[in-house]
Image 1 (cartoon, rainbow, N blue to C red):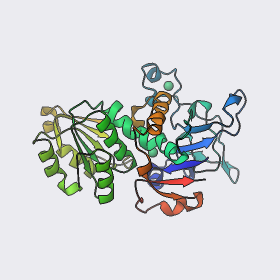
Image 2: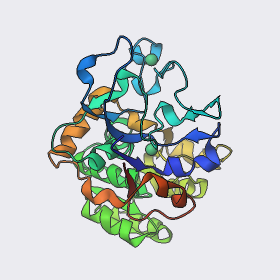
Image 3: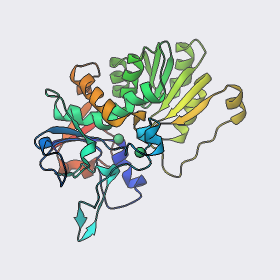
Image 4: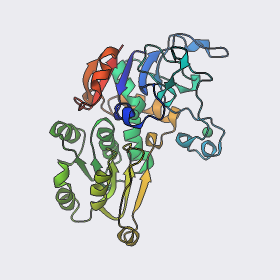
Length: 320
Ligand SMILES: [Zn+2]
Ligand SMILES: [Zn+2]
């Protein structure tokens, strides 16, 4: 491994992990050191991004073109790490908070020269999930009114995705004023604190409400706030990972008569190889900004102290 980003999902693993202990980390860049039997030897020495979803290409959902929903993703045949003789689970088939990772060959995406390791690493989750949520899950149309609740690493990329899709109004909602400023710099047309969101959305949309609301925090009360700002025919897209036992209450009658929808979003609905290659190029040529996402760079030994603390900047990066 060369660099890995620390995603909110890693930090929430203490709350959410089904299996512990687990090797965390799912957005990372490394260099191929060796390949297993039958692997492509030409890959040795290549700088690669790790995809945390490797579709099989053969199941029903893959055949329908929804590789991000694959029923039989490709992992490694056997556990690669052990703790006192017992196999250790790895997060999302990647587990890159580690000096070495063993992954399927199909999970490797070559990184274009000139793109720094830390920037490329963030493409693996923050950029892919954010841009994908805007352009592929929500299919934002020109002129759309958009609201983004939570503009950390993923939310800041939803803002960029909405801007690239020519949304007319992009409201960034976040309690942190630095994150709001970063969202404005990335194309949000207005930014506000959560308590002001209803009034700000009403004013920015001429009272219509947003066509698409993204919830990128994973908290039911934030989902409810976003629903309040949703216009007729609008959709709430759930991007943030809620606690496994979280429940959302809403008013079905109002929801029915306004023909609204709530949809989930996993990995930004990306087609892993196609979109990761494309997004790496868009980051390399500056179309998608990345440098401003990186708050703090730490070593692997510093990771435990990140738990339970607010993230500094939008993303903390581990440099190996
Ligand atoms: Zn992530
Ligand atoms: Zn499949």
